[in-house]
Image 1 (tube, protein in one colour):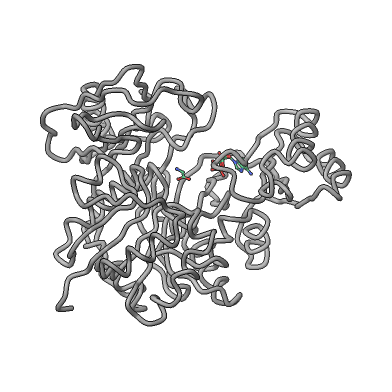
Image 2 (cartoon, protein in one colour):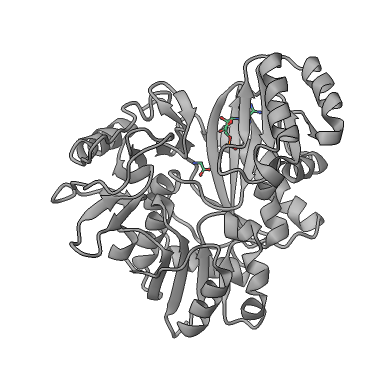
Length: 432
Ligand code: AMP
Ligand code: GLY
């Protein structure tokens, strides 16, 4: 490769800051642009005011700035067909893209599609059935045949709110009505998947695939509930740990044989082209991995603990995915533990205030980093302000989980804004 790569990264969260930071370290990088980015991404690249679903704006920017590589952070543009929109650039070989086309993105965009895919290819997952408004009576009968709690999932994208877990049948019937009859999530709840509740401990597994070969990335555990001890409502994620102590060699071998390989083989068999990340949300049920859901992107805040552990140049990895040799690339991960804690706005995941001044520590200790999420810089006075629910992720690397957590919490306590909140118990359920 004699010329450097110009890269456009789509998104504005902690995930994107972590990806941008890692790419910025690559000797292969020319210019790095982040659309729309946040106050953190501007420290490692140039933010451009284009929204992730502004396909026309994205294409113009790619053409005008000779972008060689497009990396898509969130799922929405993929589900909406960004890859198809950029087909001309991709087919002519001027643009490489990390992120699948619309059919591949259905793995995340439709729960029913994902369940059928898993069933067809023998990938372990919870028993399920799918219903529509017309078959709601069958849905009620199906509920009656299950034991509580009941898991209802809106088929389409519902901004992370589409999974509803009901304690009893009455509540489940009510929610089914809300979803199918009142169309609580519009088109996204035209279909509802009802599935068996899986009892166990979750983890997030990531791999990159071109639909033929794959590269397994470090796994992580996300902490989704807002409150101590996994209590309270679900959030985008309050922290993450990588690696996950119970995901030992034996467990990860099962994941690879039963989930990763059949997923890649399934894409190939179904003739679904793919080029990007797959994120399998898994439940460890008594030592056996089952898939809860697929996502077609990296997790947030999992990326903030996974990416800092990767030694290999991320741009090299992306290039090899596009070249077709991702299965044989030499890939190195640090033998350490990353602990990430998310600092969020008071009130999140409910209503919260924006525009609050953020105070940051002057200097960061070695092996600790801040990944911005909901932050922005005031145009007039340059002050750092909050602009989202999840504000800043603090990640530290250490020899042990305890060591990393201590460093991370030491830094967390130095970051302040009015009403800020964080979970004090990230990693509580994992062996140190
Ligand atoms: P999602 O919004 O798709 O990330 O899912 C929300 C959460 O619902 C998951 O992280 C799990 O904690 C939970 N969940 C989803 N499906 C099941 C299931 N079949 N059994 C138990 N918990 C589940
Ligand atoms: N942290 C979970 C997700 O990104 O969906």
